[in-house]
Image 1 (cartoon, one colour):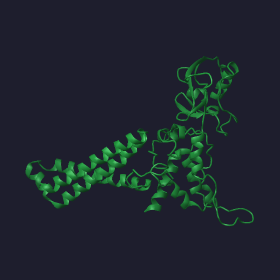
Image 2: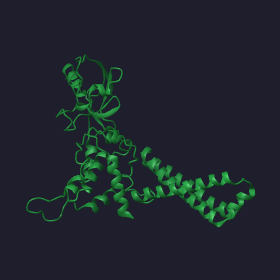
Image 3: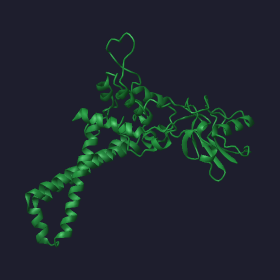
Image 4: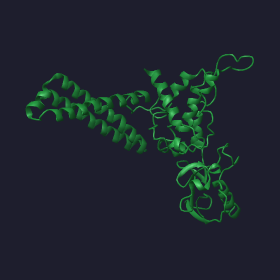
Length: 114
Length: 234
């Protein structure tokens, strides 16, 4: 058993599962957006009409949280692979965490502040 | 034929270097790479490498031949030779003790972690612990590993985290005992593997499968372990 406190779920299975589930959410969101862009004429009305609907705001927020979790698991893995010294690794991880946190909060503000 | 050898003797050399040796191999024969090394050692007795059974059973002469890991004793020259040149390097990712001899301590440390032995707390029966032919069959493709380290030293995840990631060889053995119907420590074994490094550093690139001299499939075993961990956790 290798101890680690900086990964998202404290357990390998948990991280692995989060990575897979969020990947499905992101794939669905991407496919939906592509479908929307292809099937409707994109104008201010259709676009803001889409984002006016609560279900789509929830879907967008889910996708945003998924990106945060997905990126955290992925970048955590990359940093533990390539940055061997503890302090630089921790600083890079903290920076990644901060950026993701800002994006999530900012995204919430955009979604519900329109 | 030109053989390019990785040479390093820490007592006399400051740094490793490649030594080119021109060698006349007997015509009409397909020598094994180990035979070539033996010919070289006749010329230069200071050349160091491990070998023992010379028939792919002991796993001593794992090395990197023209970029691919394998056992020198069962790799024919015709299979690896490129432009009549052979480059021999030690197994990648492990500390070099001398020439082609590597320090396998980390490899064995990871192997030890998976408890590579049968655990059964029930009182032993008078004769032996029986196993049905079907249960025995589940161990095929797992027990044949000879611990030559060709797979683990071909794995980038093991290169980056040899102290944390068990590696394909160790995980194949972990599954060999997880799959054994006579073993009673499955819960303890899985609990020891449920962290982000031991199993989950495997990214499934299957270098291990491509180099295994015994034709085993550690990636599949790792997939089975992952499923067991998932079942245990959900």
